[in-house]
Image (tube, rainbow, N blue to C red; front, top):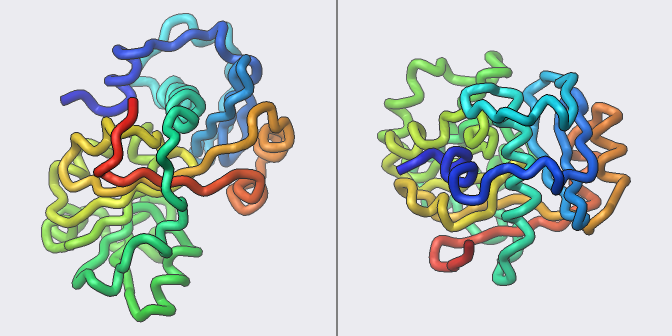
Length: 234
């Protein structure tokens, strides 16, 4: 089974002519299609100096290209489903019912909400060593957890398939970089995908990202959406 970006690259390709605007900030990259749909992807602190002309030969092993592909498919896939559920994960998933929760990628607002219901996740985050458990222990924790909150950045940094393979608990994919597509349910234990969509042609989203601002500034312009395993789509 192909990892998600390879799967979609082979299935629907990458058409530069469909991109109206490409904006890269220090925290996120945004693509607006000629039809107005907006896709975003985290950059993990890397600001790319890249234009559409640099994308004539896509390399699926190149981090920059994978980030752009993720935003591109985010714009295409996240608007295709008409059976979205409310996208607030904390209103849908009862984390009190789990014995051990692992969080891969630090989501501070989620941690705060979990704390209010006395749930303390085991956190792994490569960018915050003060919060993160040693990454060497991640496989052990994944095997013992019955719930995994997985950052959508795993899609473009190409760790998604491996994390799913080693997880024994239910997986909940989360973040604006999410590809809200049932293909992800083909991977072991993925139960829900949570992300965001934006109003077509909303230039303000791109402007905010271009100013190097993060999620608390541009997510308020979007709508939280989710997809459950029982739902079908492209």
